[in-house]
Image 1 (cartoon, rainbow, N blue to C red):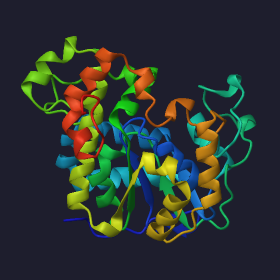
Image 2 (cartoon, rainbow, N blue to C red):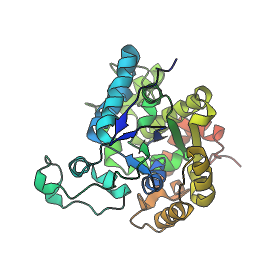
Image 3 (cartoon, rainbow, N blue to C red):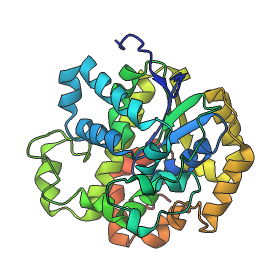
Image 4 (cartoon, rainbow, N blue to C red):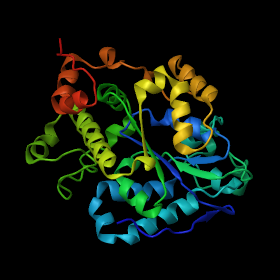
Length: 327
């Protein structure tokens, strides 16, 4: 049973139907996040430190959220009460990823990775006036979906599904993704089964230390899409909207229209189409030029492809993706 509604007021505006964009690592959720952030009336954040601390605490130790119950919802709600504040100083603490979503230039290197000083403040990325909706697209929110719905019973979730082979190819090129697999960070000895790493049985757990990076990435993707499938079964249709990344790239205007109807807000078809075109050409809004559909054919070695399809082949087929061995 969801918690009773809690009134949260940010910048003088009551938080109503906040939007959370979810997906496996490198699912392409950032493309939708850019479009939402640049839509009138929305204030979208991503990667704010206070939110990430809570999200990863729940993701890596799910029992914390279960044991704390209503307390877990209060903790994540408080994190967003701070993250969604709009002021020059608050925005000065945003990570570069959040600025990039807004189309802002990177901060000078001298201002990064150090405490914020008054002289660093340039102004907020958005003006409070006219903001009616709040959103977040921080990485790995998928593991906190239940807590988010407890904290915000009227929340609207948007989940992005992408071919796991393309997602793995991107993960293998991302040092931050691979860093989770270091022995000091992998907590399989204390948390098992482990949704964050996608390890569900003793065979996978025993093989983990010697497993190739492609196997570990495939397990993470598989675990995430299994969570997405459970969400689809448990969350009311009016609170969960699924976007297939391949459809987003092929038909951005249609996706923008569907999203607008779901959110009951205007998501610009022109903006989303422009972002997709920029991504296709590796422009500043690409979010990584590697986001091309089907790029796994050139980016995964035959061995890596076999490993990914062995681990996640069932999920790939269930989602409608043909395996390389299909004739």
